[in-house]
Length: 307
Ligand code: PMP
Image (cartoon, rainbow, N blue to C red; front, side):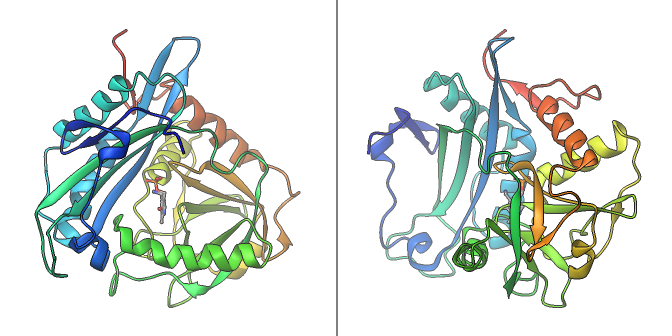
């Protein structure tokens, strides 16, 4: 099908959308070795400006991911950030976007333990809402979330996504919108592409980063907004499955998923079934923050075009 953009970036160079290639015998394709980031940028029609959200923080995580899976790729966060923003400008994109940075091992006839040569692909593609704002019916998956003792979920390794994929397919097959996975020891971890929060007994709670979750940047943004904008004291603690059943509010969050409310868990309705009050406030704060309108501006929303 016709690409929505003209260019991708390969090792810092603009290439035609169809010319970004990786060898079929590369370590990445043979053994699933690779790391990536997913980002969003938001168009402000009022300001006629595009804001990229926390690109530097995502690039820092990309570098962390390379370190954990041992890929000898580029380390300079500022260079990676500028390359991605340059790609957006080259494609002259003015609208909401999804962006990706992917680091692969492009050895010819590669071995699983190859750490290079690393190759970096970046993409910036128009994107609307990921889930829409209708709320999600989620299933607690029968698949356990992978763990730091096997495939560290803390970082964004492409191979990790087999685990979330199985959970998602199972959930869809059973008529749900999405899945939440638990740790091997039975604590709520996260979904295929999003972290989870609940409001219970008046407290906002989310699992700790030692409970088999990606160190989500949206999770971090929500924590910051809850603390600084709403003055909340958030509980970062292990969460049991049955706490979700009796929660007042549950929501998921991620760069693509944004802040999205959960309407039921295992068919048990959450709250009134609509968007909870705190979820709605955090949703609004988040959607303001991505276009630089949070009162406590963190420099998170980075203008892509000159003012
Ligand atoms: N968990 C997983 C498994 C994910 O893939 C994502 C999406 N990157 C998230 C959580 C949310 O992370 P972030 O807010 O950094 O996008």
